[in-house]
Image (tube, rainbow, N blue to C red; front, side):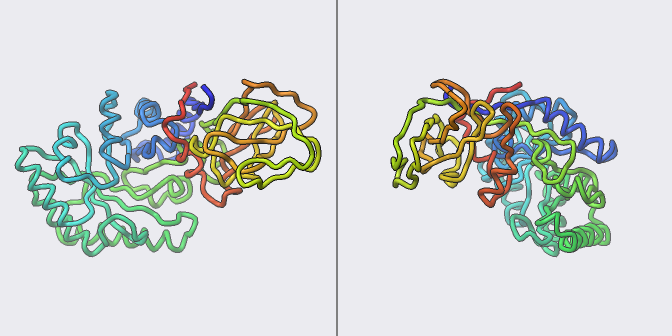
Length: 362
């Protein structure tokens, strides 16, 4: 392998155990494994979460759900994204739970499923202030009122999503909106769904009032939640050195000649680039670890190659390992550090590593 991702499944088990301990046995645990389990590998992480006692797996698409089912993972699965109505028979056949976003979709789904003599479990998604997918609170009452009359739809849950758990004022506003909706359902005599869920990773760690019947944890499972002591990062990203060579002073490096050597310089060419998930924005900015030493990225990150400066006190060879994310020797390059350099979030750094890069599980 020229480049690969190593996943420590024991770290994921550790993080799930800590999260389950935090919420207590009365609250169910949902593991978010969408986007190839945030780059960690859908099937292996799904299996691990299920073995660790996850009550639900959350995915973005029906394809992800069917992949899990195809690998004999029988844990309940919620698709949080849109599913084409003509694919709903598959969802029913494989016992996949759907999200309902509006009345028209609910009616169309019910008609289709009734013709197929099928039914599916559903969770109603409510928009309490993120202004993304979901029915607004007032319309959500109508959606629930309609949905409970549609025999092909079995309403099991209702949920919403926080826009910014670090903003306590806005989070509280969203929580109040959600609680008001639940009160309105009770007032109208509409039975409260069995599974009410609201908390994401950040809320699970900081806001116990948001737990309800179940929490949904994504980034925390992978040990990448901000400001959570005791978590263990599960992912390392590695590549191999393809060539080491010496450049003269004033040599221009890479596409666009964006770097000029200031003295005779040793460089290493790595077998990884932006097509492999190593961001082009790290050009002349990023670092990698070689023999436990930080080596600066110079020139532009190419599609499948990256060039780095090699310090004079190390002597790597072709085929040696370079660490892009993770620990080598006494140093470590964390996802948080890379995300800060790129002005983004840890989620993006790991989720962007394509599935074509092999995952090695430990």
